[in-house]
Image (cartoon, rainbow, N blue to C red; front, top):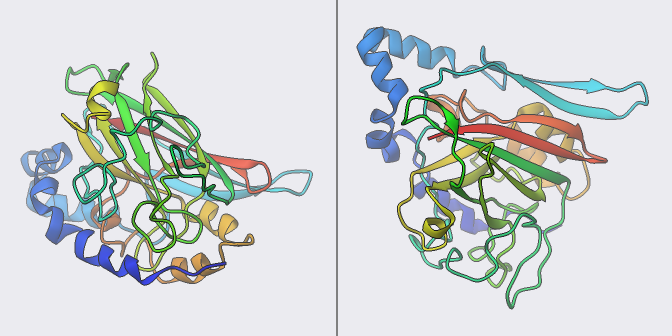
Amino acid sequence: MSHHDDSHDEIHDHDLGLSHDLPRLLSRRRALSFLTGAGLAGAGLITLAACGDGDTTTTTAASTTTSSAGSTNASSTTSSSTSDDEIPEETSGPYPGDGSNGPNVLTQSGIVRQDITTSFGSASGVASGVPLTIKLTVLNVNDGSSAPYQGAAVYLWHCDRDGKYSMYSDGVTDENYLRGVQAADSAGLVTFTSIYPACYSGRWPHIHFEVYPSLEAATSASDRLRTSQLALPEAASKLVYATDGYEQSVTNLSQVSLATDNIFSDGYSLQLGTITGDVSNGMTVTLNVPV
């Protein structure tokens, strides 16, 4: 297995959490509701309560179960959030591939696809790893209904099993796998077929995504509604990282937590995905994305 390359040290300059995203954080609806409702002191207490160790928050809990056949599964249960809570705005990081920092994959023919495990166009690489299906349900909270946002488009990307990002990291600059765009159906659902990403040094396991009002907007990289990140549960990550090819992720995961990650440490209840499935047959992660 190739180990995580030094190019990820750059992430610490771009994913600066509070110092980088403070203006965005202050604009979140839940921050405003804290300030107008419980006051600054109450907001501080709520934030601290949401930043416990691991995945044992009051809103989302991760667990492992063993079936009667002896196969180990990863699952989590998620309670509902307030209907007008928007998914937090986050940095896209240094490897977005949307034209804001170097190459733009969104305008390339072939980017609209469900299976993102392979590269497209002139590239031919295939990302290996534990299969992961990613299901995001986009909801429109701006009209007060939290109705499914039919026709909205999601651009999604994440690192490979070695912690590398296609188009940017050494050895995969000519690849564009693990990047794709999908339009939401009548239920607001977008689905991607992928692999479970690595945990690289300094970051909790995560998936990046951007939400656009339409497929046309996404493929022209314009009128973006929201940029955010999905956090993967600890229990599922530990199961995946115990398999061949993810050895470095075991060490990296032991050195970070949701409470210390520079993106999720300010609160992650709306970003922690729900995992089902197992490492043998593949896993599925789901998340509601209110925008």
